[in-house]
Image (cartoon, rainbow, N blue to C red; front, side, top):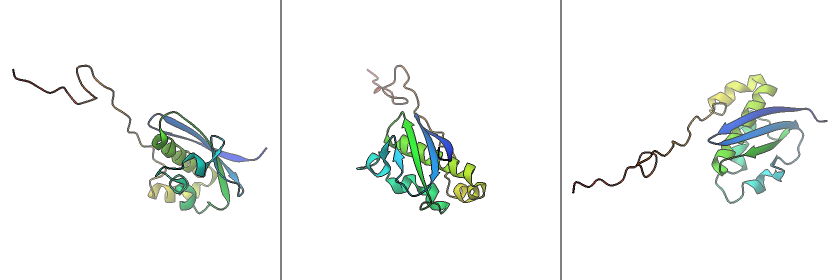
Length: 130
């Protein structure tokens, strides 16, 4: 069994379990190569592997991610956070560089719930005097 470091990342309603392995294999997300999982979308593999790039490990390590819930944006951000957390476990000296790039902070923004008598969370129906 290969040795790995694991990090959990969350964003909106997405959760990602990311494992980092030593080697030069292709990174996978839910068993699919990362480039295929994110194709036709702006959050490319370069966006997700930013923690590896910042810590200078993109050629020495690869990752596998299991992600569920939410949409593609939340999933991409969850994978990115999980990857950064796994790198921090593996190499604590890399944490200041990752923090400087704002990669180890969880984004707390969630969707606000819709209220009754409202069209959306805050939008109200048009007011009529008469």
